[in-house]
Image (cartoon, rainbow, N blue to C red; front, side, top):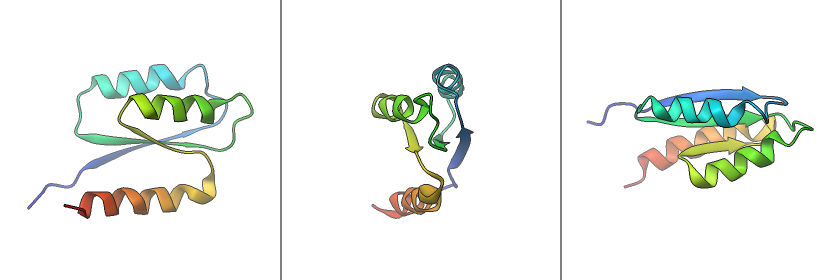
Length: 82
């Protein structure tokens, strides 16, 4: 039986200057975890920056609140896939 994986959930709003360093620090912990950033349409471009970072790092970005639960559901279904 696989042990459950940890999800680190980070809500953001206007955190363009802070989010990259936070992601770097989280990943440096070396945890077996997914990182999910949920940006609420920040006008400072946080969502776009996070989408770019997600392509490089093991992070998931949900740019709108209404997609949050769909993103969580996708993560759980991905874990179930062989």
